[in-house]
Length: 429
Ligand SMILES: *Cc1c(COP(=O)(O)O)cnc(C)c1O
Figure 1 (cartoon, helix red, strand yellow):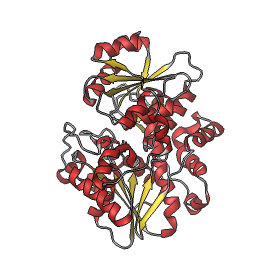
Figure 2 (tube, rainbow, N blue to C red):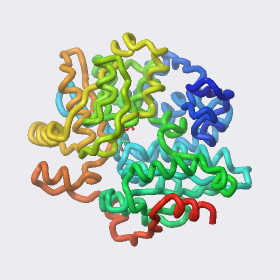
Figure 3 (cartoon, rainbow, N blue to C red):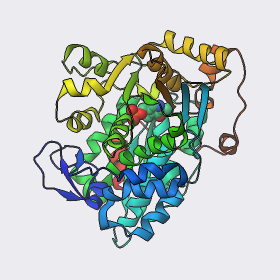
């Protein structure tokens, strides 16, 4: 499979090159040259297949012959070693829980798949690769755990000191081995600005081969399409029109869902539910795409003012916004509504949602489904990751799951940096 740049100013590359480079030389996002629907026979039998088989069938065209069948299957077995359960709340409402991975965030799947692919592609190369990533909380932990112990790859994570939760900080700073946490005296925006600068710094590039691990990378973005197949497998017998509401920040997850639909998965409608960062909902109202600085919310993994994957969504609809609107809606909800939704889910269904999942639920509420529809909202993080907000809102305590207990007693190790010069010094020494 070949990938082209959405800026149309760089050569086409292989899947391997797209994974190693992350972004095209013209700064465009890579996009697969073709998306070929799967056979109707596959969907007829999907409920009889295990997740590994479904995953292999759905993902193989995007990898092509660059990873042989046997190796791709073993990568998928390794990556998919946890559950993706549907939890039904009433006869036409369910949540798809994506937080059963090692760091309890849905980014685990993409981070693990990318780590395995990257390690496969560089296994014969002498120079090590450095994955450089800035995090506001969730991404860093999933990337750190996904790449832990992977040969030939070092991971350097920048996070804003005092601005990630205690649990998130432990997940970032206690792994050791090939993972280094740089604790930045500044904000998340400072971290991100430093990472961007490092990618443009030729002196650093002469010391290290850098790549990024955010959803711009096709190996982190595309495997997320599997979530929708796993959901459909569990819900097919309902025989309804399925509507997915996806809490969205960079719009990578929902864009992967649209790719699943292109592969033939019968999804009736997508709802991109956002917090107060409403660039896309505004675009659908006004037809003007106006990026804004991000505003801080209680669903902070979605605090994005210029979602990087939206351009991929427009490309999937060949820039036809009228067509997009037939299959895709987007609504924004503020923190007050989010807390009310957490409350409502608990009092009505005894379900404890995190702020991101609660926004997904609000998306379905707002859309008004009829009896022939079945709504699924994606729960993208375990509520324990946002313990303080959820406990305050519900006036209750949440038990700490085993994955989290394991890191809490470990000792934090980080290197404090103050500015870009410190980062450069670290990367060049
Ligand atoms: C990253 C993240 C999101 C947003 O996903 P996108 O693919 O960036 O739209 C939603 N919820 C949680 C918990 C996240 O970590």
